[in-house]
Image (tube, rainbow, N blue to C red; front, side, top):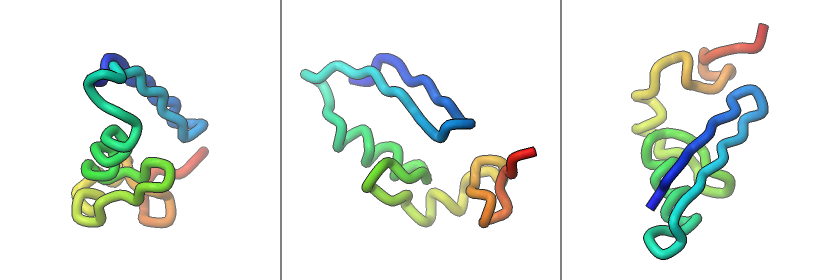
Length: 67
């Protein structure tokens, strides 16, 4: 049901375009959390987060820091 995703890493914002007759916001948030990222009020799956590359983790976990 997702047709387009645009990620704005500097603003920590993601825009998702989807077909409402095929999915909904809660399903999308759950899918994002299941791959290791927080999605608004849905927290990331801890095991999936641990598997993310270092550059995709939060700065406090040794991830990418701003220059």
